[in-house]
Each structure stands twice: as structure tokens, then as C-alpha cells.
Amino acid sequence: MKTKLALSAVAAAIAVFSQGAFAQASAPATRAEVKAGAQAKAVAPAGEKPTAAPSTTSDKTRDERKATTKADKASGNLKQAGEGASVKEDKAMKGTGTETTRAERKEKTRAENKAKQIPAAGEKQ
Image (cartoon, rainbow, N blue to C red; front, top):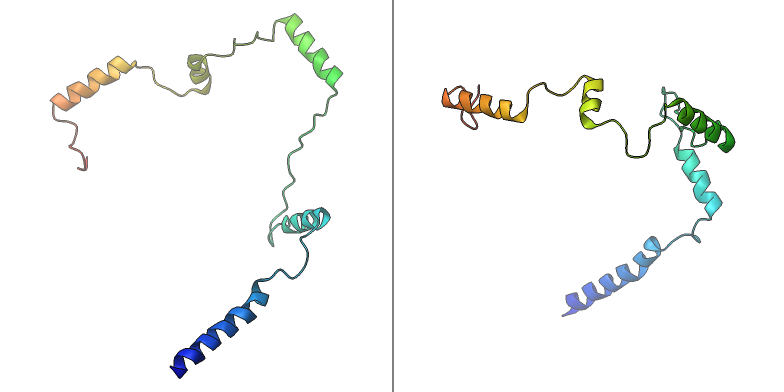
């Protein structure tokens, strides 16, 4: 019984004294302190050149952008809304994609499967 009482007392003492370890040392950081901490963390690792964030501002004024848009529209270089390049045009421009249709690919696969040229699932080719 005495050991139970002693263990209870030790557990209570640990609970009371451990609260200080989890308590916050000071008041929450101010906005300026948080910003300063974020800037300090943005330091590049040793041996690496720090990277600059891309600019989010335009180098032209709003009037210059509007004038450029009007000039493009007058010369025919500006497409109307919804008249962007189609998917086929995009693939042709990138040089990717395939020249065969889906039906042609399906027929080729059926023929290879019939000729037992396609290995079963999980087998090596």
C-alpha cells in the first residue's frame, strides 16, 4: 500500500513540474517578428546561389498594355475569346502525339493479341 501511495505522489509531482516545460515562454510573436524569421529562413544553403523570387509586377503600365492589345486586335494577331488553338493544333506544334487513330491502334492490338504476340499480364516481353 505504501508503494502505491509513493508512486502516486511521484506521478503527481511529475505532472505538476512538467507543466512548466510545456508552457509558452513568452507572448505570441508579433507580425514583424514572424516576417523577420521568414526572411532569415530564406537564406540559401552553403555553396548555393540564392534564388530571387519572380516578379509579380508588370514592367508596363495599364495604358501601355491596353494600347498593345488594341494594336494586336487591329492587325489581326489577337484571337477572339474561345478561339484558342485546338488540342490537335497544340500537339502538332509540340511535335508530340500520334498519327494513328484510336481505331487503328485498337485493331493493331487485336491483331497482335490474336497472333499471341502480347505477353500475359505479369510476364516479361
